[in-house]
Amino acid sequence: MIGLVIATHASLAAELLHAAESIVGPIKHVRCHSVNSGADLEDMQKKFQESIAEVDCCGDGVLIMTDLFGGTPANIAARFLQKNRVEIVNGVNLPMLLKFSSSRDSMVLTKLAAFMRNYGQKSIVLTSDIMCGVEN
Amino acid sequence: MSIVLARVDNRLIHGQVLESWIPYVLANYIIVIDDIVANDTFRSQLMMAVVPSTLKLQICSHAQIAELCNNPELDKANVMVLFANPCSALQAYLKGFVFKALNLGNMHVGEHKCCISKTLYMDTDDLQALEQLARRGVDISAQCIPTDRVLHWDCNCCSLR
Image 1 (cartoon, chains in turn purple, red):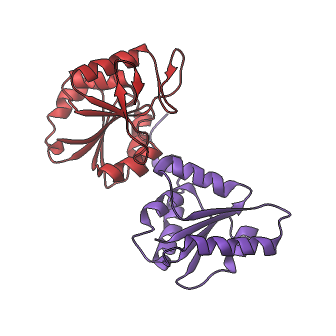
Image 2: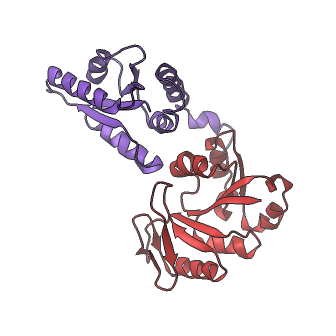
């Protein structure tokens, strides 16, 4: 089972997980990190390291989901990039988290990471595109 | 027709249904029986749009139930049926859309409704409809998402156990 670390600004990570679990039930082997302004980066890095080790209990690798490419959580996460062990996908959203919980056992880490990126992008839709021609 | 889940959920199709129940019960055909949605083109279209293309969705009013039951497409389908409230479920049952079990998912808080659980609030109409269904042998239980514990509905004391 591929482990998961969600790393975001403020408490978005924990709230995203909370939202996902209210839909699909408990999600195993996941840790959340919030990076607040003023946090000690070296300390954060140590905490990330511990979380990665904790969620990779099966040795199948870890996917880190961050909220913003270029933001502090993503920047710290990037230090852990390691082929076949740690992949990072930036721009996490709720559909990705839901899909992760049902796909984490069905593909290897690199495939899952690419799948998550594509799924997350595809899940952003304009309601007006879908509902064109239908009057409310 | 094989009914893999009959559910009362006032949100009808939403996240819990799409992401949890459909893969859990392996439904490939969703039926929403609801007069309001069936007569609202916008809500119907939106519902059609959110259901994955691998699933069939039919939205019908209570008046269309006889027609629905005769649809040969349903013979081999794994059907999940959704009702907004117990009265709607009872009405469908009495019109011939028969199910053996009924899952109570979400029934929102409202005026004159008493709290049964975190996700279930009922008024006297709801309670009477459930009693009518139970009297006809329908096994009624509450389970919001598949990982929740199943609680059985006891009509005599109007509570879950």
